Amino acid sequence: AVHVRRGLDQLVTTLEADAAKAPADVRADILYPVDRMRQVNRGSLELRTFNPPADFAAAQQVAAAVKGGRHPFSGRTGDFKRHYRLEAANEIMPYRLYVPTNYDGSRAYPLVVALHGLGGTEDSFFENYDQAFPPLAERHGYIVAAPLGYRVDGSYGWGLGQPPADPITRRVQERSEADVLEVLKLVRQQYKIDESRIYLAGHSMGAIGTWRIAPKYPEIWAAIGTFAGAGAPATLERIRHLPQFVVHGANDATVSVQGSRAMVTKAKELGMETVYIEVPGGTHGNVVAPNFPGLFEFFDRHRRRPASTQQQ
Image (tube, rainbow, N blue to C red):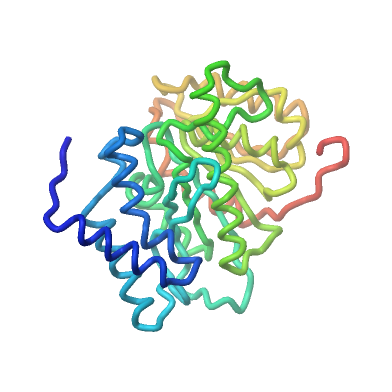
């Protein structure tokens, strides 16, 4: 695939000059399309992970706001993207946010970190699943942060298991986990977050990632939600204090329902609070959006409980 754009060299020069004069916290937002273009041109990324018209236009808007003496993201609510440099990769990463329209920084808000499935991007929870996630976040009053996870197949790390033997796969997964944690850190810095109400949820690879990241960092989360996932039952010991909302289709041909069944069985043995919804005839994708309301209602009922020293 090839994208042709007139005047690209001049545009890049202008954006780089604008970024050099901009506040440090928005430089990555201005430089993102330049960095992504170079990653695509050297073969590090597929062109489909980059939308040149939209991304260059967004960078120009940020630069124009700075020139006009305004911070482009101060007080901004609704659905928008931010960017930052992931130092481990020396690459600018995108993440997508939903901030409720009544957010004004006067009180703390709950946060959901949403992990996309294999082949998806930071846009998945916003543009897929009948676009049902953002309206529910607005209605329930949640900030949503959706990282890319470094690559569309990053897997969000390897959790508490053994790292992959292949060094390239290991590096990608390591950076995938790091991207999630960096986005979480940035959002906690940028917004007034209720530290007792930070939740982790995902679909497919994102659900697998949820069951990898939550046991590795059990002190962060108030509850978790998985859709069509799988995990390592032995790791649940570390999050036995965490309530979990689990959904899977009985006819899922992509990730076997046995993956969730095994996790739920172990959770019950440990006495974990678990809501399990197995949808008769459900497939890999059609069980997700209809159960988003239940996920938010479940999160509404739970705040972080301290784990015991043994569990941590």
